[in-house]
Length: 545
Image (cartoon, rainbow, N blue to C red):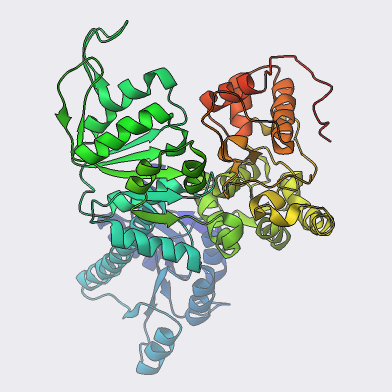
C-alpha cells in the first residue's frame, strides 16, 4: 500500500451515516483484505489501517462503530492501541485478533474494555462472519436504546421544562398530578418562563394526549373579533361572514384549550367566558342555538389577577372559576442552577452535532445575569452566540454587552438600590431591572443595543410586571373607568424605551415588536397609549443612555 491508511470503499455520505463503520487494523495486508471482504458482505462501511498510530490518526477524523485489531503489531501493541482508543472513543467496540490466544491475554483485554477476541487463522471463515455480526448486533441495540432515551428526553424538553432545580421539580410534580384530570388550571409566571410548555406537558403527558390542544393568545386577538374567534359565527352574522366558522372552543372539544394572557380579555368577554365554563356550551355569533362543548381550560397570566379583580379590571367570579389549581412557574433568576442545563439544551438545538462549548467565564456571566426575559431571553442569547461565535467555544466576547458585564453591573445596582428610597417595596423583578436588554435575534447585529439605567420606581401592585424585558404598566392594577390612569415613572420609562427602539428601526412596527419581545397587537396598544408616531420626539421623555 502507498499510504498508511486507506479506505477500501467509496460510499455515499448517506450510506455511511446509516451503516455500521468497521476499522480493521493489522500489519498484514492479506488479513486486512480478508476482514474487509467479510465486513462489506455484511453491509459494513470498512476502513483499514496498517498500524496503531495510523489507525488513531484516522479515528481523529472518522470515528467508527467497531474496530477489529491485531494483538501483535510493530511499535504499538494491540493492548496499548485498545487503551488509547477507549480514551478517544469510549463507546466504540474493539475486538482483538491474535494467533497466540491465552486466558491471561483475554482477561487483560477485557479489563481494558475489549468486546472480545478471536484467534487467527479464521477457520472456518464463518466464525469471523458470526463474530462481526454479534458485534454489530450489540452496537445496534445500544444505539436503539440511546435513541429511545434521547427521544424521551426530547419529549420531556418539548412538552415540559428543562431543569433539575427544586422549584422546577415541584412544577413537574404538579404536572404529574394534573395530567389525567379535567380540573381547570391557572398558570402564573413572568413572560418567557415557559407557561405554555407547562400547559402542553399537562395535556400531552396524560390520558388526553391524543385529543386536541388549542392554544389561544388572548393578548394578540383583535378586540372586535375575539368573540367570533373563540365561539365561532354563523354565515351572515357580520360583514364578510360568507360562511359559518367553528370557534376555537369547538375545535378543542374533547381536549384542552389554553388561554394565554387571559388577563388581557376585556370585561364584556370575561362574562361570556364565565358562562362557557359554567354551562359547558357556546353560542356562535349570529346564532340562537347553543352548542355543547367539553373542554379542559388551562389559563396563563403574568398579571396578579387577585389584585386585578380587587381593582375591578378582572371579574372575581371568573378568577375563582379559573383558579381551581394554581401552578407557579419560577423566573429563571430564581432557579439559576438550571442555567447550564438550559444553555447546553439550546446549544444542541442551534448547533447540533458540533463540539461547541461554553467557557467558564461566559458560563459565570450567564449564571449571574438576572434574565428579565427569562428562558426566552436565554434562548435568544445562545442562538446569537452560536451565530456570531467561532464555532468552537462561546466566550464573553460572544455574549451581549449587558450580559458579559453583568457582574460589575449587578454589584453597582446592588449598591445603588441600598440607598435608593422606595425600592424596598418594589418586587425583586423590578429591582433587578438595572438595564433593559433587548432580546437578541438575527437582527441584533444591525440594530444598536439599547440599555436603560437603573431608576427608582414607585410601588407596583402586581408581582408580575415584566414582559420580555420591558416594564409593562398594563400588568399593574388598572381601573375599569375609561379615563387613562395617571402616568408613573415606570410608564415614562416604558414610553422612552418604545420611543427609542421605534426611532432606531425607523418606524418598522414588526421589527420593533420583535426587539421589544411583544406582539404586534400589544405594540399597537402601547403606541396609541403613549401617542408615539414614527419620527416623533418629545423632550419630556427621559433620556436613555
